[in-house]
Length: 352
Length: 81
Image (tube, rainbow over all chains, first blue to last red; front, top):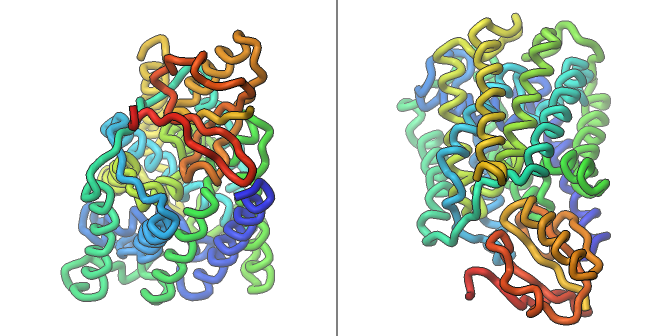
């Protein structure tokens, strides 16, 4: 793939994902939440009764689609590679910490961009925090940070996570009475299963081809002045902004935004944690799903870390709501930042 | 001839770039080209006459390819040693 083709691919991927972000809201997803990896993993954890927050329980087919789309595309391109063994439990802990930060802000980096495209200025504060977190991560990269190399694994290790996603889809479609579904709140708002799954698969295919990553874009810009990956980030914003303007869903301001709060310091710090943790993991939550679909068992463990983190966030009152953050959540974000810094130093070259 | 080396860690690429420069070779670090890998780490592109004089490669180095017209030719991969 030439440099130009690489750039065109990422532009298309960004535009389609941004547009899907707007259209999925029209199809029934919560406002400014066409796609949110953190929220949707949290909802799925709720549907599996890993937490009991009644308003955020639903198996989100978008997540299933993202993983399966990435798996299919990586197999077509002969890039499906079962691998793992790069500090899996440290990745689990970092995944947990990233989810604590995301549920403080109420969104992953992808939803941050979609919220911004909906006019939610709280996401601008979060973006500043996200960039600071990435700068912190880059500091550790330059100090020699590494979680160690990964190794080739057996095929089963690579297909196990996508197979679990198929299992979740079977549960959702065939055995819904086993699951918990929200009767009200964001979890009760969702697009039809086929539409959500199709959107997820399409986004998964495009993200696999383009390596779309919210963290990687800013990292490459800082480190190499390379604008390719961040173009995807900008295109998501542009396409979703146009979509929202056309659909009359653009509402500029801080207050009264959907599934959001205005505690600036905590929106900022929550996304510092997401940015820092994601650089230490080597990619944002969307990217981890795509890598897991490509057979990366370390990313699969990271996603499980997100899910357990999300469940704990709701079981112990760490997650924010429209009313704002909780004291427990604030303590958890600070602990999460400390944990990330310790992991950063302990895995830097002088300490490795 | 121009080569690209990919690494398991960011720091591995930076160290290798310094090693190349210490040997008088022109080298830059950059994001791994999509055509080379679906993973998104960083790589080191360097100009040299052959790669044997740079061996033994550091353990962070995953593979080395030679840039050819229309593509890459893999010369070294850690899992194939």
